[in-house]
Image 1 (spheres, rainbow, N blue to C red):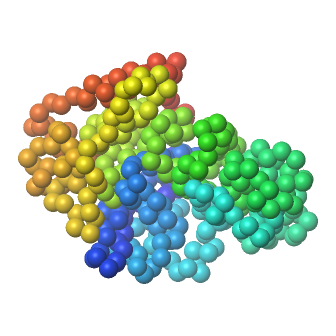
Image 2 (cartoon, helix red, strand yellow):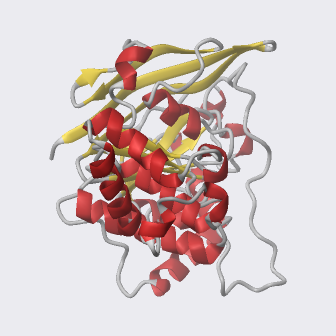
Image 3 (cartoon, rainbow, N blue to C red):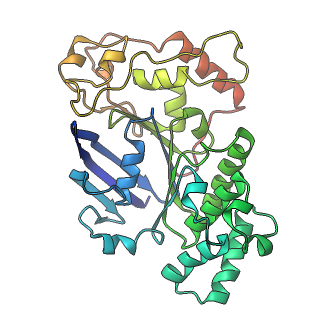
Amino acid sequence: MEKILEVKDLKVSFHVYGGEVQAVRGVSFDLFKGETLAIVGESGSGKSVLNQTIMKLIPMPPGKITGGQILFHGEDIVHKSDKEMEKIRGKDISMIFQDPMTSLNPTMKVGHQIMEVLHKHQNMKSSQAKERAIELLRLVGIPMPEKRVNQYPHEFSGGMRQRAMIAIALAANPSLLIADEPTTALDVTIQAQILELMKDLQKKMDTSIIFITHDLGVVANVADRVAVMYAGQIVEIGTVDEIFYDPRHPYTWGLLASMPSLDSDHKAELAAIPGTPPDLTNPPKGDAFAPRNQYALAIDFEQEPPMFQVSETHFAKTWLLHPDAPKVEPPEAVKLKMRKLSSTFEKPILVKEGK
């Protein structure tokens, strides 16, 4: 399979008044053509910084890429200038942001905002660009696109604004689309529609997608693979089936156990991961998750674990996978959640053919 993106040992820091925040600490992953990779984790785990770095959108200073490579179509973009990145952003790599109301220009008609991308990256004339803008609005499911193309963002509902953002992101047919919590600001019904739309568009356009979310439940029917981030590192990565039905890292267990489900007893308390994420101005020695991990071993407080290989596609950064470690099963709450997930789907969550 063709690799669209290779991130190798990426490190990103921010110099702030209190010191140096090590926001991304040695992240590595690959993304293949037509694949959706979901990146999940608590707020502050480094998800958004990682993906804004891929687009070279972090402010420098105070931000700085302190190590690693970002190979896009085999070319390292870490050292590209802003001018060079302007030719890539929007054309080859696009992003859908969390809140469309703050991302769309309130003083410009939605159609003109789509047309701007077409003028810059496709060299289209105005009449041709307007026809394409209408076509894109229709593609993302906005009714009466001929009318809507001449309206302003405040005339759109929240769901329609997010659809318009997707239309802008897809205007130049990018090979990589980064969706940064694209459904967080939407209600549950509209959220489901947007997720279904993204799946449908990916099939039609064969675009690779990085989907960022703090909600593990959102990715079950969207992603091919899932990367779990904690304290600026990927602590587990695998196919959707592997992460949901065979999780190996205690942090992933905690995320799964804390997922609410519709059939839960309304009197039952939601599971929570005890403690708080570490201060990344002074990352802890050993495994960053150890202070919150009830299964932590003595070595977790002394030495950072490597990535252990579980299968060809599944890796987890925990000493519990060492051959000499004691055998530990996921807690009962996680096993219960896994059983409920199995019964929710008639067959296991399957990744796309060839992935």
